[in-house]
Length: 351
Length: 247
Image (cartoon, rainbow over all chains, first blue to last red; front, side, top):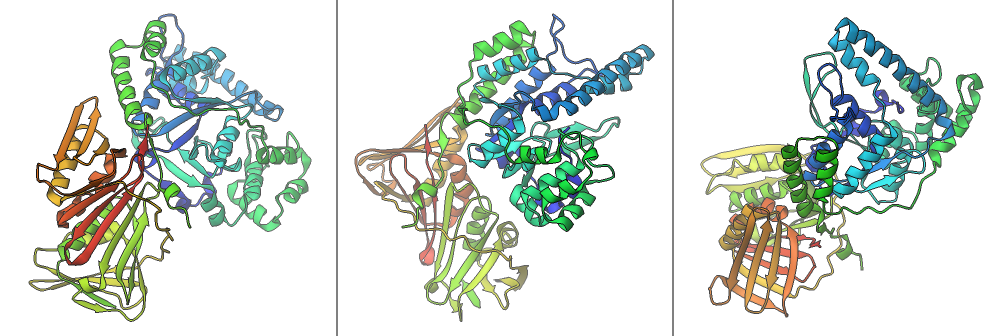
């Protein structure tokens, strides 16, 4: 999922920071990206997701609630951006993901029958799907918590990048690099998974820290333009042409783009059969995706009764834990969001 | 270029305070004026300004303007080694490195690289302060410590009679009042009543600088930035300007 250009990002373009470096900064988080992470990671040892007494999955709500509070406690102004209607371009990727998921679900059943818990957990993670009801619950929870969310007309990462570009937020937050292609001046990775994390299939823990990648620095270090970066993405594979061009990895793509100069001509020069859709259409989509100006970023005091109702009464969360977390949320709200820290720039205008 | 200053500890505490807010910056030494450093934190909430007049140095051997790019954490580490009664010699022979010598029971010299960075041009702030309060530096430091116990936001309220510093949180409330009669205020000039809130962290981060100051002057106006001026021996001045918080 997403475009993977990690290999060509120079280590010097990645700034590893602590969560405290994001204090007072607005970060637009790709909501689906985060919810899928929670859904995959928050599970019981055999891979069964957390569920309420009615058998409804609650892993995503658990992650959304506790993780968001953890970020807000660091003074980070989180806003979630939800995907809208997937563009027609994305149909192939969606179909591919659906197949992977149904295959994983089948293998999960097999593993459970064989009693192989390791494998069961792995396949359970792969088969996780977000239903419409789960997304709706997530939105209701955010509303009750006083955390803003934005409904994107189409791709959430495109909307987050747009908001970052016009200065409504400081950065886009996601694990994928797509928001850089969409022109976000900054991408923050690992924000929803910061902390100790178990490596898959190993009994080893890693300390994960947020990473900041600045678009301008990245382009400068690679010696390319944003348009050329988009071409690299398309060569390697995006959500709209998941397989990319055969035999082309990020390093080759970078070389090709540099040798060719003009990204459009480069894409046009490749055999059309390499792409499920017209690559120029994908290119244009990254440059001008559908976005909206209709959003309001307002951090409100948490409605504790409503949060309690959703989590404890509807979904059987532990009332004490929810109560404690709500106290922390209220405290963080009072500390960071009730007032607003101004900058000095307004008083430093040149004469 | 060679500068000699009578008390290395003054450098130690100022640079250590700066290093908590800013990573890098440029010392500008000019033959006519002395040494100046001005920089803002990355989020542009605070502006630091440190000035050593030419006369504050016992030796001031500067041919032409010298700019020294500093990594404050590294410099603070070296300066932490300053002992009581140590004098400080700052020397730069070329553009790639500079050295710090502590002159006391011996001469201890450390050489650090000069960072290749450009000083940010920061315009002079256009501000008129309606409240100005001068207090002893130890009172200022105690006040910050008191408030720190309670909250993360500090509120200044000043009238012609008193200067009040307050903070509140879930944990409780703190209110510290210095009135004209109490004798702790050296000078108090306030138009009407001025009231503004600030993020306490900037004050606590920089409170170490007050250790080497004689007096502190706080200037602010309602919902406007506050300036905290540290008056240090030999005419040395360290001040910071911090943007307010609004509800």
